[in-house]
Length: 159
Image 1 (cartoon, rainbow, N blue to C red):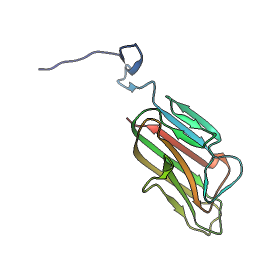
Image 2 (cartoon, rainbow, N blue to C red):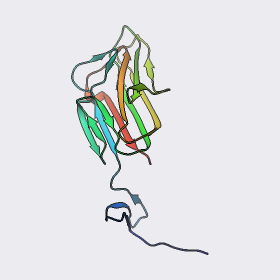
Image 3 (cartoon, rainbow, N blue to C red):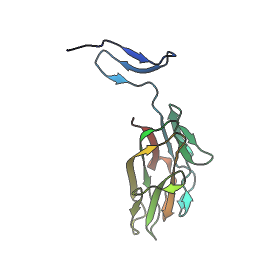
Image 4 (tube, rainbow, N blue to C red):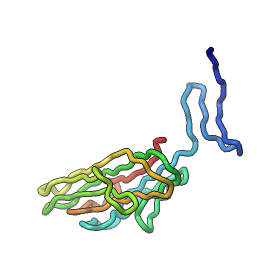
């Protein structure tokens, strides 16, 4: 038995659109939780949470909390999280960690070695999060650059 279901829009029972299909067959989801922010201001040194105070965007209910420097997810799901960060330390290694609800996430560290004033750190991973979980980024050693053009921190729902 073969069937074809022809719809352009899928809505919940209250009429909220959850999915549309355009003429080319692309599937569009109008509400996807995501957030992105960068660090600006002064350079940041070890054992400090990275401030999220520049280039802040978010949608779909994800909160970029610039007071507590964290991103809070609105719903449970599989999320992509990560960062790119320019270091600013010649005297020591620079290491950055990602934390979930205040605890370091296993395998979420990135490190450069001393010797170059500037180097790029990055870490990207997929993680299951529950509603109201939050992600933070911390400088564990060394220092990071202050220019918001050279860093980005993000969280977005995959599904």
